Length: 370
Image (cartoon, rainbow, N blue to C red; front, side, top):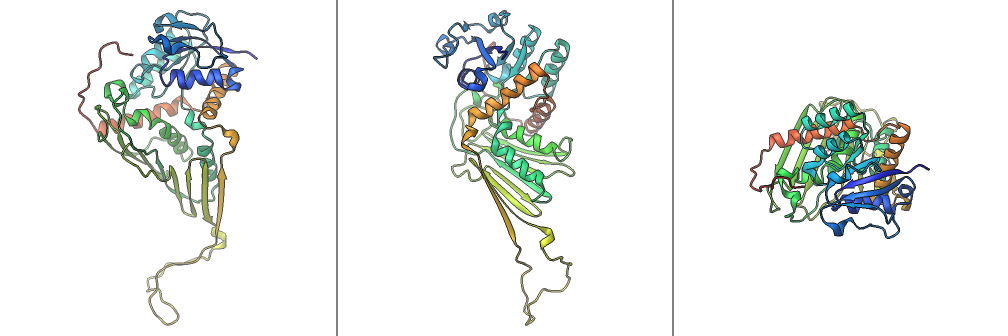
């Protein structure tokens, strides 16, 4: 089996602990990819993440030297977020296929700049959004598309938790904040689900961003609501102010509802064909003794429950599934599951949320910071 030779720019939490870990430690990816070079200014981070991995992997302190290594076929851009777009362009112009960490950028104009370079160079390009491959999310989509819940009124997604941060992920000029750090995972899922109801942009976007619980100048509270004709209302929360996070996914439908968290999806619904047809009544509803009663009925409910199989493997499984699609796309021309048009739509939503919520910047980033 042909192996794609990979170079990774950045050996921080994403570059080393996610991408390099996936390539060097997950069996299906070990068969398909070979990390032949990494770049990071901190030499201790460039050591193999798996003792059994290729001992001759080249280590560069400057990513520009990595981009001169013609043994590489695929460059993974895993530096800090504010440089993703620039380095993706630099790598494609140097002749490499590219996978960029999320977020690609915070502006649609920058997405278009990257896509223009991709078109000009003819190189492969994708953005790492592994949460699309989460079995829990895929099961939710399957239940919605089965129709048992009827017309979908609302989908609620909550990636909530509690914590204080003071790292670079709290600095606006580094393309950070919860909207750009955590929210791209649920937003990617939401955009893909949104498109199953019609491939259009949201007609209305409401956003509330706030910096409440961190020490930087970027938001740690995110509330986003999306509306559009023939689409369910989408309600997204990503906050660091919640010690009682509750359910991660909820779906409200005409015939029933769904809830999901962890590895479990549950849904409950009635079948319209089993229920009595009702006609609206202007008169007060009453019992046999003509006493007023509340409008209610007893319906027969059906229920379903699904748990992710042990073979799902959690975070590593999502990343493996993502890169299996990348491998097939590069070598066989298979379509990307995470489409670039969906990335663009996601960034358009993020940009509008920022437009509605301008926040003061008070943390300065030194020129040239990676």
